Length: 153
Image (cartoon, rainbow, N blue to C red; front, top):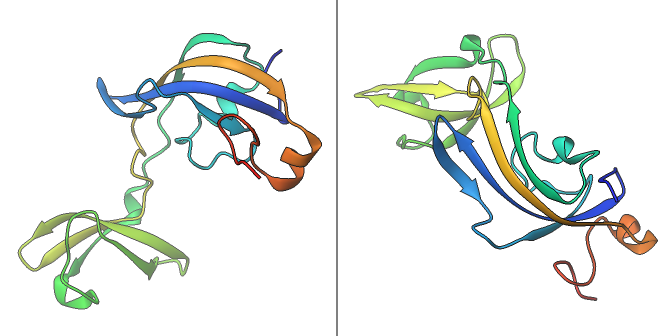
């Protein structure tokens, strides 16, 4: 059976960026309900569609990096002392509400970036799909997997 929008998929994955493994399931398969898997990293779920059990390597092109979503502010303008990786909500120059991350601190100047953390980076997924099955009507109604690898109720 191949993966579709109503499948339950048992898989293992590793996410590689610039030759470094960023995250993965570390040999522990995870079971997901397609369309309800926010725990998967960017782009992976959509790239499972149409695949059957087996091993795959998936390359995704970089999401564009927008330099306009990067800004430098005085540390005193932040509600608390800045630390790398901290997040702050704020309004962009065009009035949109964005979540900014602290990416650099230089004395009293703090660089904030609202781009996704992996913007501008090509992503490589190495994955093994162990099994694919149709979701039950109850799983689709509840929005999660039941039984092995899922919620027991």
